[in-house]
Image (cartoon, rainbow, N blue to C red; front, side, top):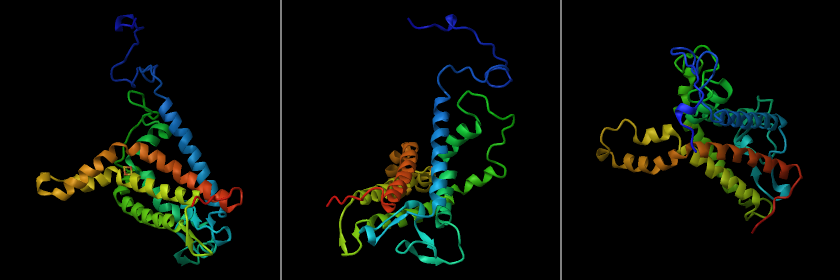
Length: 275
Ligand code: FES
């Protein structure tokens, strides 16, 4: 038998006080904390792993010696003079003395960090502002994104263009992964599939971006006067619906791609050729 409102234990609420009343953070009885807690654990794990991988500054490229052409997405494009032979992405910066990945990751991380979805996720899980709908803030004051430093989140629309440049570079890396250095042939290995999927997921994540959808269909009074923008908007809107999912899958896969290249480059596993 289902419980009626009359049978439930009444919870005193102070109007105008903290959400949930003075003694209670929330009236919610579901497991509202599960989502922000999972996000907290997952993002912390990603940050810890990425920091370690970036500062390791080794095992990010598999070259001719292993008969493969695979580079970790964390280190591509590799722009400094200290990059291992074969990993260079054209431009060579000589004055940069620490890990080249620090230089590389600035672009993609600024895009992820300012993403509308991730903002919601880490405001809830790390900042507790608020941790969930109908749950009191972890802070006494709320100033939103109208002041420094959070006003900088508005650069998201510009970082989207930076992300596209990285998508092109990582797509070239994925195409190069078909190359078999040494005999000049082409082939498909597990590493090829890993890098192709990585590039594909990054494209889908970028194209499902809210800003991208706005770029196509925003500020338009009559779609009938902008048929191409209307078509693009209709094409991207279903992708946008799954932006959260693409955000998580692409983030996970980019880390797994780094793990895979690292394991092959350090000799822990072989990159098996499929055909
Ligand atoms: S809103 Fe998430 S990438 Fe733009």
